[in-house]
Length: 406
Image (cartoon, one colour):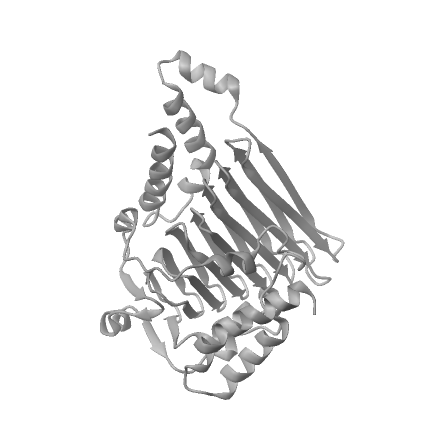
């Protein structure tokens, strides 16, 4: 038996009590069997070479915390508190179209949804107590803030399904705060014709958290998916996004900001599948890394044979603030159509000495000058966020910068 197989087997056994403690049903048993067969992904798995989940899980501890992020109090949207994977106030949540159910919505799952997430969605299905549903009926428009609060000595599993009807619009904000040994979050969404989902994700958990979050979006004819994210990382934090543009004229925008320091790790991985013609995709990533931190970006555009006239661009930029900081980027194109416009780029570097000198000459001390340049580096993406979440995102950036200059 290889070392990697032994590690995988040990981690499968770690999660077995969580999965088998729930009422048995065929779906959960089958999901855990699939996860047991493949095990958790490790660094020999393509796409995980820079994110060592098994090592992080072995180091995870069971200390709980009730710490919350004050920055999130600035979010201007109706909220649903989800504490350790369960809705805290079911009546208030139901008024916003958010409910808990016992049966999983399998009609949302595309055939390769689970494969894209290396078995971790199967683990989530097996161990999550209930599924949280968010629904927007045809022609409706609304906003909801899903505030994920963790205060547990046990692993936490959160499962979410979203459905947006024809010509409907859903603005959803998801925030993550507090601490648990391991947090598994899996969400899947589907839009109807000419419908849209705008998602904002803000993560400000404690440093010891091990977090895996996955979000899949199935975009219909003329539909749109927009996502803006800010992650402060953790012992391990990986946010995966997989939009399927399954019908013509779909549109996608994905923006992400990673701010990591000390030994924190933040990973943004995405796979945008273009299946039909005339889709438009724009993706931008900004990583700022200090201390021994690591920021990972992996983005892939898959353009199928039927996806003619696809227009897709991807750009990843990293700012390294110390000699020990690491940024790993892997932009990727896989194209089978012949009438497309696709491009990607990646850069990394330090703060510009000339710009620092310019600001110092105008009366700023070095800390303020550095903070201003970093804020400008990520400011473009923060400025394009949903207005309800923008003040909270700006405050997260401000808090992180103040720690650097204190």
